[in-house]
Amino acid sequence: MDPSDDPFETLHARGVTDGLPVVPPTRERVAAMVAAAGRPAEALVALVPPNFGRATVGKIAINAVMAGCLPAYLPVVIAGVEAMCDDAFDLQGVSATTNSAAPLFIVNGPVRKRLDLNAGAGVFGPGHRANATIGRALRLIVRNLGGAAAGGITMSTFAHPGYFTYCIAENEEESPWPPLSVEQGFPPGESTVSAFAGAAPQTVYDHLSRSGEDLLVTIARSLAVISHHKSTHHGDTLLVVSPEHARLLAGDGWDRARVRASLWERLRKPVRELVPGVDGGEGLPAHVLAKFPDPRTDATLIAKFREPENLKLVVAGGTAGRFTAIVAGWTFPKMSRMVTRRIDLD
Amino acid sequence: MSDEFLDPTDSVAVPRRVAARPSSLDGRVITLLDISKAKGDHLLDRVEELLRERHHPKAIIRVKKPTFARPAPEDLRARILRETEVLVEGLAD
Image 1 (cartoon, chains in turn green, yellow):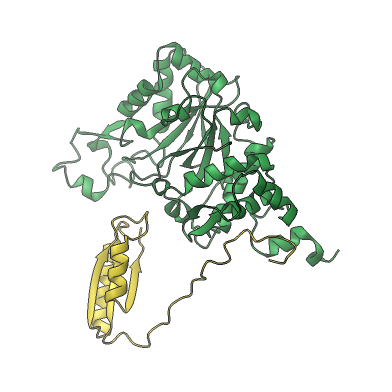
Image 2 (cartoon, each protein chain N blue to C red):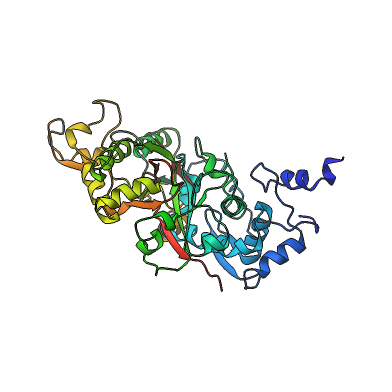
């Protein structure tokens, strides 16, 4: 077969894919997708940094078709575009950094069941069309409308597998706590999508703790080394707590706010342990160090995270297994914040 | 894109081109933009020294972005456009 006759080869040659085959965006498929939005194709949803391409309903629909979305998924993709293009998310920086942060999308509310979004076993993994293709559509939009192609604008040294697709749902049914969406200020029962700029998930294993207190020590000691063992002043970071860990914590009276406050407090270190060149070359930046006349003996505590609120918690994953996944955020304090948007299902 | 498949990019967006390079730096106003990366100022200090040694610019202006993580504020961009003929942006780490 002549490669120029093959739609997969044709689209790949145009530089609009993620390297995997895409569904050819024919007029018929795109029209069906646009119809699911209940809005005209020309309606502008957002400008996608860093190139500020116009994410109209029509352009979003084309990318959603290519990713393999069903038309019913489109409202989630549109809300995801709104969330990641909010100024607080700083998609410009997320797309350009040498670090490894990709937008992770977390879905809450009744839409999870309606679209069969996976919140349970293998939540970060393959096999669920809604998670796989909604996340992929948003990545294609970052590339095709934001201009963030690897090695060009995207200078990430490593990137990670979530740069292909990164979409989970909260396991609200197995969670002892109110959903993330409620924490983010939305009413219970509302469907939302939250965008969070995250590294690849790192699994923390604790099968032996039998008290919330003990488990929090394990989680805190594991969180202490994200970025490096002396990094401080972090912004938002996500903990994906398995149902078993969440039940252990809640059973001992730990709600989200207490978990956050406790972790934040445990994750402080004295200045003397954060001096660059002692126990590793990294350490406090010069302008912070300058505040302490004798840093090598100073016991002032400096926090790993700027505020307890920077520690975001979501319950997801299978019902068997005592694990918590750390999804480190983009490392700097005034950079990307988690942004949540309502999904317009009407 | 052919008629067969719709275009997933914003094809109406204006393609960006690299500005024409001046043949000489003599008599030019040069801006050195520090993007607030660690030690970017060290790099630009040296660039300024070399520019003064090797060329005869009309002026060298030093400006700084508040953070490297976000685009330069509009007023800073406007100032650079208004005052500058040559811009050097310093990325360090």
